[in-house]
Image (cartoon, rainbow, N blue to C red; front, side, top):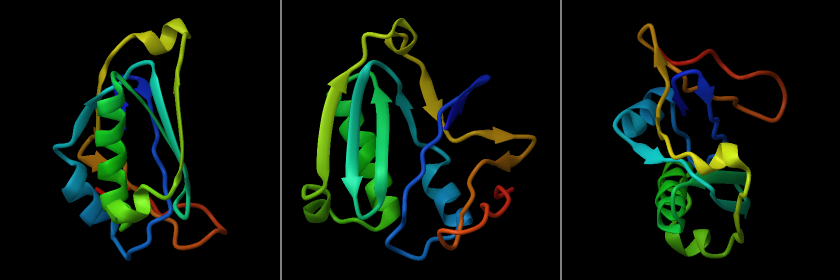
Length: 123
């Protein structure tokens, strides 16, 4: 997810077979406000972190990522949850982030396994 030249990336291990096209369709209108609140969830989908403007915004972003990954709310509550707050001035500024699209190419990619690089962005 990106805003201008600043890039935020989110990656996770999906528990369902979802194509980059489907991820694009589900995220094309999804945005969130970044900020100093940090939520990290660790478990079957890897370690996923989000920096958002509030704890509620962190939860909203994580719930969307979990939905994409095929993790239901009961399983989401079983993941290791770490909440924190960044005092770094760079993280204090709130910006709107969404799916990065440049020249008609959405920056969504997939990697079918632990080895090798990702498939090219969907576009």
